[in-house]
Length: 376
Image (cartoon, rainbow, N blue to C red):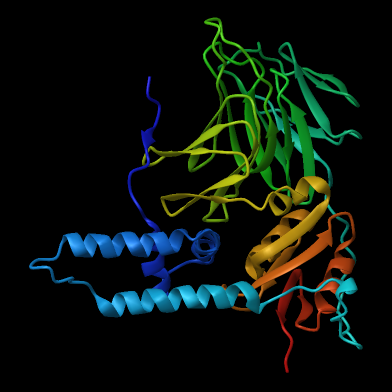
């Protein structure tokens, strides 16, 4: 049975057109940057020129020269963006001699192990386990610190529970089949206590790293593992992968570490097959495959923030989720930066690191932390 349609269209030129017309969002610019580094934008321009040739008559190429000149200018702009902005580490030697002072409110600690389990009948159970792992075992919900959590319902494949990790938290869960899921701050996972005999299905909103345990169906075939997000459907057959699918971001990213996954656009049915080390990028109904920066994508699991040509507004969002603080960037959506920040330090240390570059000031206005460019 065919589950998904194959990808058969080139949509890169649509993204370029939106950028040229100043209509591209920051997330679309991020997709374009990924494609630019892999040369896929050049391929899109080539394909469009071939189409113009095929549509021409009498051997004359009829195309919009102004449009292609603007496309070329857009590509040059992308290269400039890739190298224009940097967040510098102390060891780099580029720190200012007298870094600016920072107005800091009461210090904020980094994310802690915390989550809430919502049972089918609506009962909520706070999870503050020392080891931070919830275990589903033979239809039972086990917490190593709290013991067995009784749901008051009969375990079945139709009955779903929800584990919610708040901003300022992180947590882990072992599903009924032994699959391990690490959940980042601001994430929600819906799961059954017992999987069906046809497939294993869960729903994620936010970010999670999955280590899927292989399972066999009654037919002897591999039992599929399916993750749905608001926009994607990921079909898995025993693998390790990361999903980044937050509601406040237009871009959803699936990153394959090992094994094989098929990623589909839930709205259009368009699908791509990922190899290890690749990203599936979905934004505004455009699904693309690009090489992944695994070190950056998985940094949250390794207790760090690693930014590589990352928009500053996205950096602010990630810090906001981790510290549960409203952090905003008062600058251009196309400003991109590189940097490394440990995730187990208080917010004051992060503010000082950002400020010490000499490029930014950090100011509290009530409960909002504003990051802005330093005045010359």
